[in-house]
Amino acid sequence: MENRNNLKAWIYLLPALFFLGCFMLYPLVDVVIYSFEENFKFTTQTFTGIGFGNYVYIFRDYKFIQALKNTTLLVVITVPISTILSLLIAVALNSIKPLKKVFQTIFFLPYVTNTLAVGLVFMIMFDLTPDTIGLVNSVLGWFHINPVDWLNGAYWSKIFVLSLYIIWNVMPFKILVLVGALQSVKKEYYDAAKIDHASKFTTFRKITVPMISPMISYLVITGLIGSFKEYNNAVGIFGSDLNFYGMNTIVGCVYNYLYSVTGGYPSRAAAAAIVLFGIIMAITIVNLLISKKTVHY
Image (cartoon, rainbow, N blue to C red; front, side, top):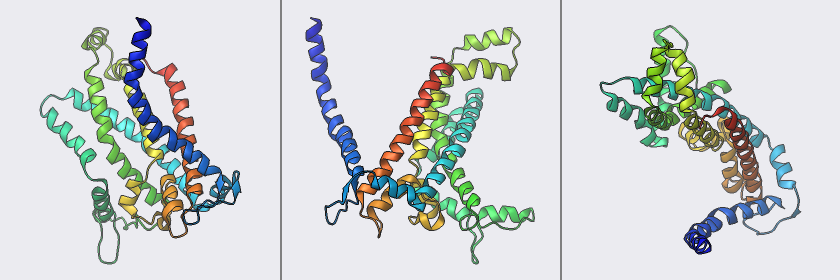
């Protein structure tokens, strides 16, 4: 009987395993193979040898190093700030009664808004040209602060704008998940805390955070993965020529190696993609190991 049930289970799993192999496992193996075929080009369908030449090339390419630096900075800045702000807003939304659904809808709107359209709005807000002064610089002018060329000026001003946009863009989903997690916490714990005269901060630290720590861990891991794959938001702010602004990301480098004027090298793109995959895999494993000790399931 048990063998028959096992056979049925495998039969039910076969379609999923088939599509998983075709659309995930095979492409991954193919990319790994491409990454070791040195200087493989689309046009000639030839390569010069087998080895680590593609990896050596991308780590000597200043554009890839700049993209790696940009991506790392975006991860370090946006993931913790967006998670902490989302947690605080979710706690506030969970505490209020009047217009609760209205505020939840307002905070969720950015998540369903077109990324490129909102990026255009941000670009206009931070714009500074001889003909136009964006909203942000207009506000700075009210306080007699000189206008800042956010999009064409210093490196850190561009990182600030892009980080702000990413945080604004990813927070709605995190707020929605955390509000749901907060609503699942049993009220008996909070009643016990009131009886013990625990302060709100102590209740938040000792009850709220541990009880929703699985969701926080989930958001941190998915946030890290999403930030390392950042590309669309950068295009929304700076346009498709990210190298001109020095704001390219690792995913942007993969596209450049494939499709730019000097591109057409899928082997180099594959090497960059494998490096990105390795970084994400390593960080995910570290987070999972840490979560085993810190997350309360």
